[in-house]
Length: 589
Ligand code: PEP
Ligand code: MG
Image (cartoon, rainbow, N blue to C red; front, side, top):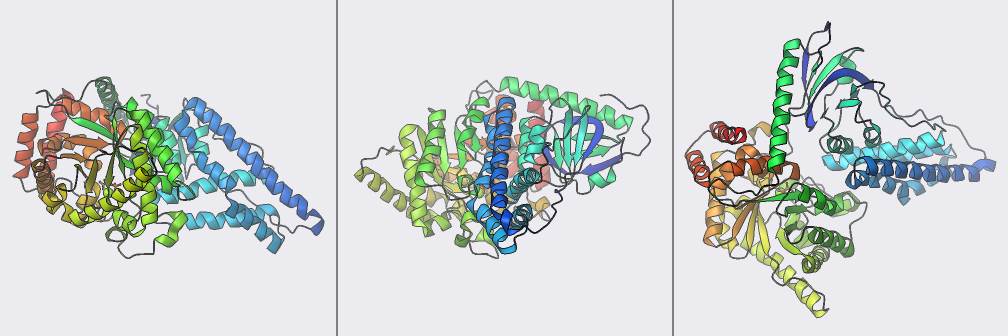
């Protein structure tokens, strides 16, 4: 790492949110994204038609530009990354946005850019108010594309590209997906932003370009000065302004270690996940879209352990039809056959209401304890049956498993299965093919399901433990409230005992247990979960190499011993430290 000759300003360490892994160091390039100035004027009657035509032309021109970016992104990054811009094309086709703009024009006769700016602004504001982080970010997509339309209307032809003359760390108040996609990978060392979250599309692009990124730094752009240098730690979500020589030295070492480790893990990722004493452990992937099949294969996963199907709803302007869903499930099942694909039925509600169907989700005081997942589906049988039929039909084209989220006990499971049975009967009567032996399981996320696991197991072919929710409900810690996030402890004795109980009861009933919450992807807990008797772990694909490495370097007998020791301990942090030491030793192997 080069060390600047004179570092006059003092070192400042700032904590943000880790958005894309990696370490980078360099001089800053400040990029302040600001909305375009829109002049307002009245349009005379003679020019009304021309004004409407100008709007249409701007939409067409914007569409062409977005498609050009998509082609570029597809060429440089891949099809999946290019799909991010689908959302932009959808905005350009949004009839409501277009009609409202024209209505505003009819009402006010103000120039069309003023009308469009007003209407788009209302849309953006509505999205920004939504509690769900993912949907809030979609407001960012509208802003991005709206700025493009305005630029075309105003005759600003120049692309708003971040032009880096040299290798620099981009420090921005915010960054749009088009900005991120337009970055030159060889000169953008890292991206740090005042705002943003892990799920923003710009961050997704950064991650796929393997550019380190830290977001949520609040007022960083106002704290930096020209000539400042910055060190970005995308692993820990920290940035260090004007780092001292000793900091640079320390990070140089960390970077070398991380690179060597990542290389080592990737090399071992083609090998089977078998423990040193010869026990195979199933490692599966969590996905949100059928297009992730390639990633599942790239990371050598044993299929999909959790397909979060609600993202088909969350990403779209309208609810997907049975055919849309069938196409998506079938594509994934076919792409991954003979590996199995576990499709979870809709987990809408809680922090994931559907914007396009907000009337179905009345505002609740405790949405996580409310109208969510299977509770919502059993109350909307038309919608539920569409999904069940789509899953059944896809089961004829690969190895499909189905599971329900948020099941509270055996009766609810039976109710869901009765609806599934109706769907089977309907398909049989219509002569439509499906796999009659498709395994059907329950997620274990509600403490009542865990405590009655023996009863529930009788109705299930498998269990899949959603630790994200199970821990939230077990410990009464709202999983999206950052004020109490520190109280969320996967190694609390209550969590370990509950997991153990679930495994014992499942195995007594001769069914398998998977864990698909975030805990399953944390290499610190790989051995603990295996030692507790968990049969399968499912995680976001890039986390698989670390889990596999730990599996390949442990003995099942040692993992069991670790779990026994942990079960006898009291302190969550001491249990965590014990697990972390165990994992670190295996990682060093
Ligand atoms: C979980 O709760 O652990 C889980 C996997 O489901 P989600 O995170 O989608 O609620
Ligand atoms: Mg859950």
